Image (cartoon, rainbow, N blue to C red; front, side, top):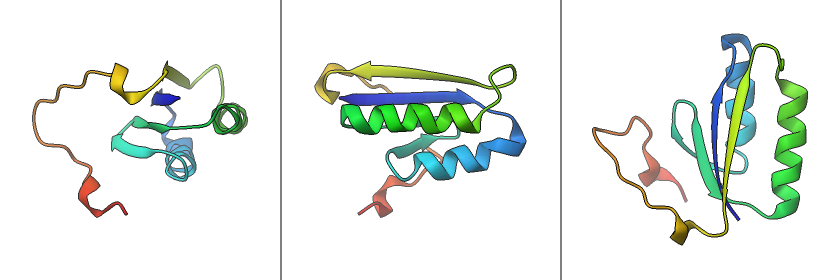
Length: 87
């Protein structure tokens, strides 16, 4: 499945969440990750994030798609994240 994760996390936890998500997904913008995951990886990510956040203060949204071909993407401006260096 293709997943886009968008989050609004408290400053004291945001680096931990970002570092964790970079193990599985591509960092697209300050609070946005995306990429292909297996159902098991998706469940693991959800469980780990649930343990990292404070539910009364933080917010995470998961957008799930069957495949990236079902996602139409348009961009404006210059990206802050350089994805050319990803192997």
